[in-house]
Amino acid sequence: MQHTNQSFTQKQPITFAVITIIGAAALLLGLALIIYAHYHERAYIFLGLGAAGFIGGIAGIAVAGSKVKAALSYGVIALGMMGTVVGLNYLTSRYGPAPNTTLGAMVIATSSIAILGGIVGALMAQPKGGLVAASSVILLGVIASSGIAALIVGAIYLIVLEHPGRAYILLGAGTLCLIGGIASGIFAQRKARITLR
Image (tube, rainbow, N blue to C red; front, top):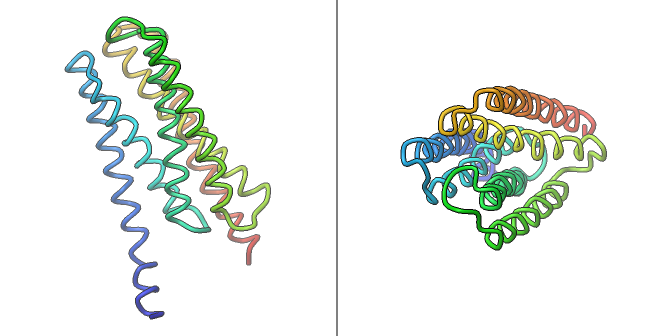
């Protein structure tokens, strides 16, 4: 039984790496649907699931505790962040159909619940790391996910809406948040592993 459990543990990083790659591909597909179809509701599905897969996969590779629970929790946070962007678009209608305040409010409320639930789940999945574990949830879960959302919105501003001034600010901030959040979150997880030993 121990051999089977050890074999599964050795395959987990490969599985989470594949999930990360599939998440990135889904993000690109969602962005392509928005750019080339000019607006497509299915794009939101790909963007949300892509963000969840990308951040969840990275969390599954980096987190010291229960990897599957952590990956799901971090993925829910990323899904909530993308949902917030979608809800804001429904409210303001920067691209796509006319504003729909009811749908926008529902999407934002559901996304906020998902973000809070993901944060609670990620904190519960962490080993006893205290402040280090909490900082990892904020850095990798919230900041890196916000970076993905800012990159998507920046790309839409640049390519679809043709507002380069706003686009470059969003692209720069998104890149900084994504790279900084992932790197800091991984560093915090390594520190948590050292603390547990």
